[in-house]
Image (tube, rainbow, N blue to C red; front, side, top):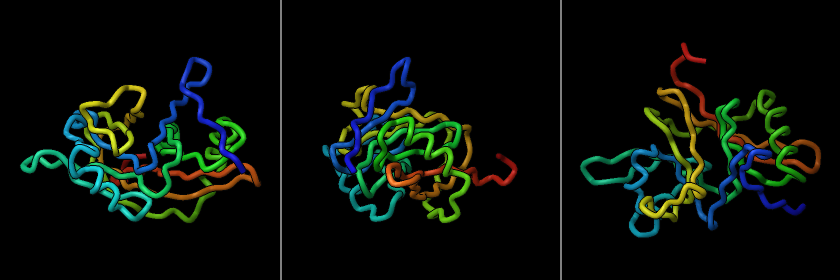
Length: 180
């Protein structure tokens, strides 16, 4: 089945989607985006070494390394669904609405989540193509992610709805058992 092009965010379509040039995405604190070297340094090579759905990578100046999360595997169009605190990757669907509805209807029924890395969140995060050096990022190339400060564990699962909708979810679950 052929994937439709992902539409840009607009007043009529509030979900913002980003795509990569074929490699992984990286999720990191927006305040440290300028430290990401992409293909101009070793950061992109380190991101490409991640063999699982998600992996942790350290980047930045040697004496001030910062953790980031690599969203590896397939370079699927990606968005963030704040109501589910998860990333949604578009495998195939006849429309954005069908994919988002499928993700939301499947989310709580998934019982086979793959546990991934953990990340401490202190401020705004952004997701972007790991090839791009932070100093040359444009707003259209980034996906902002706002979460309450705390520690989170990533969990990944694929879902299908009928024969025409499929995607991948990367959920962030708080590690503090007292938080919802």
